[in-house]
Image (cartoon, rainbow over all chains, first blue to last red; front, top):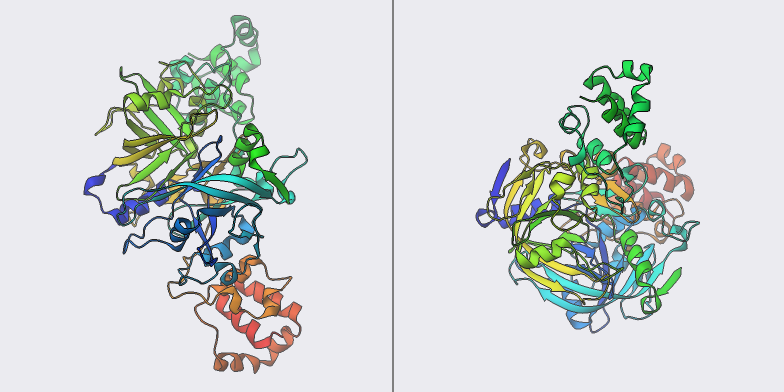
Length: 290
Length: 290
């Protein structure tokens, strides 16, 4: 392992490491106004939700590392503590990137990036028409972490009004992630498109508590064929099979021949798991394993 | 658009909307200990980096919506304000999911989920050996947003020591996102694998300031063929082509025939953009557009 003690490490390199290592990050496309009503629109990926009651979104227009200056978004929020956080989907990502250009104060990034500005219902800043999901927020608090170059400014927001494009809602009345087609941010110039084949699902763990990987036989836990993901799925089974279930398997001569050593057995179990037959895999491993 | 006023909206539905709409989210796989040294390991996706100087990671083991109880991670951090935040990559995602099971206090999720615990250098909680990137952190502050069901608890962490698996570092000495192979969290049972074909790059906008979409001719901005992403790339060009460049194009009879109306012209420009020849597209649009 490469080891880094952060107190001896360069802030710029650490910043780049965070951008790559804390990923993929959601993007807050933040629309603000100053006290004179001048509009600003800029993307931030130090952003996430942090619970409800009150609904909390936090993003950070951080201080610039190179000269410790602050961004227009941050300055606007101190004058007018309101923001529309627009979600960013794949079809608007190049325009969003263009809007992150550091145009001089007073330049309207809606126009520069070719977005359509729509008035909000409850706050002064404008919404991005092209965004499929727009959160109108009031700023509850601003926390400046240290005031030093590269440091964060937490904008703690409460959502007061939400606009959702009906096109992203499916037959069940819920938002479909494939229709929403959000993009996330990684380090360097990288983005991820969070839809289609990049998505996968894992059923939530049992509320009845899975048996745990620690309940599996040693030969299974130490398998060179079964992966960590295989073990994780086996450990999520609700119970260990009982003797009756195992005996009926052991009587199956064709199967016994097929899994005549641990290598064949683990390969067969792995195949069952990849077909979604995890409990069947657990049974065969316990019936024929050494 | 579907319109929602949050003060009249159910907290549970709002929570689900945040999980789907603020995505993809990075995952903090948090290892903590209580004052007696009992270990806990649990994943949280209300998590992000928030700048350097000091390096700041924030995650939220939120209060449970159903009964307003707190999680073991939160309770441990009040006793011992230290945490290892382990990154989660694709090869460990099923074990991570299993560890999110609500086992009783005192159960070691390292064992339940089949992970290997390694001692840390600067803090008491253990690291997950299987994770390619491990941040040892001291907790600087804990902010309880409201104490109400479903509300966030901000754990504000400073990184003191970092472990990186050398396998994820490429020839240039930087972390390669494809080797790191992180997963992100969306709503419902959805995850995204942030590597391979799901990744794409957008060069950072010019520091010289792009011309902006507002500098493009009206017929280009209103095109039904060129998309928002096409316009965004055109607007990121450093300058509008000058007359000499356009005249030499206009003299090209073959080309003039090819783009004899705006529909052909825009299709041709779109093709150039998709081949990465954005400036060539801008020139042809200005030379032959009406």
